[in-house]
Length: 391
Ligand code: PEP
Ligand code: MN
Image (tube, rainbow, N blue to C red):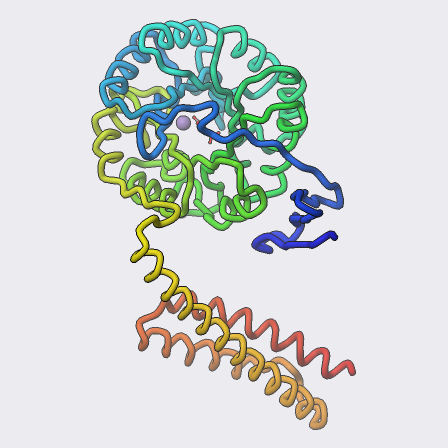
């Protein structure tokens, strides 16, 4: 039997299809499956949470050695990162040291015993990274947006057993993210992870890249087995925001963190404002609260079940209230039709929004949340009344 399960319905174009015991994804009418190896089969976690750290860019052997030495001392880093080819928005900025830096990273691997990850953006990068024994590859946000580049990388990876992490595309397009992961998966790679690094939005926001948490949540809904690593550095763009973003990622059950660290961020050749010293990174990690996915203590399980029962009842009540609202809307629609009154009346809508928001504030719940719900209720009301008018 085929059962369709919609994801979070955020983009409403990717659906899970449960076919017997197998889960497929229906993606623009194409069905596909993915085999995903558990994260702990290819990356041993040195700490809780799993931590990937290292400088934004590999600048010199000395910079890598100094940073790796301080990170080694922390004893919490599972994978050492460094960009060797840096995709810069404008020309004439530091664009990475290329092949020379791969030689330095091979030294770091030998000297400190770290597994190493670098960003690859095309076939040549991928071939070189493999040649120098890089342990894990990652695809950057500016590459995930380009199916040609991702396919080029995927073609080089056919028959190669190397883990690949795919960052989300620059903008909030879940399909592009899934598509890039799918291309790598199709080349036979099973050691896969996604990296959530936030999304560029036009205009000023407090983040360099807005987290838009609903996207990684939707990705998790579609591929529950796919590990998702959060990159608070590129979401935040500055040191101050990193702790709250990292904590939120853990609270949402993400599988690890990728955080940029430089022994002296003030002299970093790229992303200086968002890099932490290894000491700062150690302090941050020790302050993070890692919550369990599932409770093991019976008393905790019972209490949680009790609270969830209450939520179930409240949701049932909410849906019953919605049913009542729908019936009244139909009645209003019929009445307006009889008396030739238009469906949409601006003053009434403004009044609904204002009074409900005031009530939310009075009750101490989020005004913004209630306004969003009102917006949805209003859209549905218009849809129902349109139906009534056209009957
Ligand atoms: C990076 O990790 O240094 C990087 C360039 O990231 P992103 O692709 O997320 O911008
Ligand atoms: Mn960076």
